[in-house]
Length: 399
Image (spheres, one colour):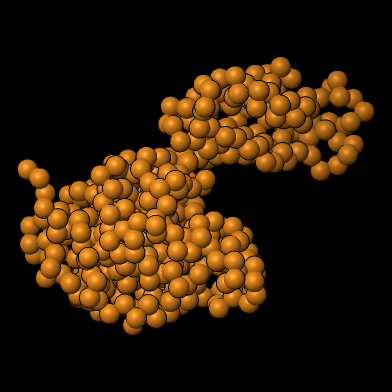
């Protein structure tokens, strides 16, 4: 068993303390200056070099001095523009954000804390390792502002494999999700304006009311999507907002339509996007209006795909640490993740760490004001990350 003799009790307290410190000064994507400074200070205390990039993201490098594999371990650092509730689903939280407008309602504070402590374990055990570890602290995962700079930075090195982890309130504490294939969805934001001709409601014949095609688009898009996709398609769509007009006796000039599509198969996702765009253009044209698609429709994340070999290794490590009953092979994430771009370029594995505990009140969904974490599980995340890295960097490679 890798890392079994390590003093985990002391590190457990340090992981929780780090998570709470980061939680209190929750910073939005691209603004993680204090979090990045903490990461840099932590790395410098371990005598590890830090590589910075455009923005606040950074990479800490642990070179063992021995030839071997190159493994990238990734955590995200950003918070969300959500007003945090002082209570979780069972009572008062252990800590809340000092900023009344932002909070870590997705668990990225835990991700950063766990990776820092895994870094400490591996740095102290570097004499047992071969190769190089790249600890990647990504800015702006939520607002898509950081992954490209990180991918550009990693391209300067020879990366053999990648690892990532996400806490999951829907997965019970005591479980970790480790499964092969597509384990998250890709996301395609839907956002476009239908522009017509505004005027007085008494003369609709002199106007081109954009609300009419916007309303028609809702039903038509669902029907067209259903007919365009093959049986068993992985695509889902949620149209969520239509903004049009400000007065009941005025026909507006334009209508904003927004929503999201999610998918696991890339080709199905592309087909869905083209279908939705075609429907929007057709219904707008039928009512004498035009469509303008926003650039955000080209900025969605792709699915995370777990490599079978990396997944099997992670399952074996988890079983070695706690037993085969600890991990769940039927896992998956309904949401989307920038880590999909990592697994698109490098073989890797992304696991989910169960932190849902009814008694401790940590079962609220991600991005909810009551979201909280079962902190007793954080040391499990550190152990699994460190043990996986040590296994990968010490196992014999077949020629």
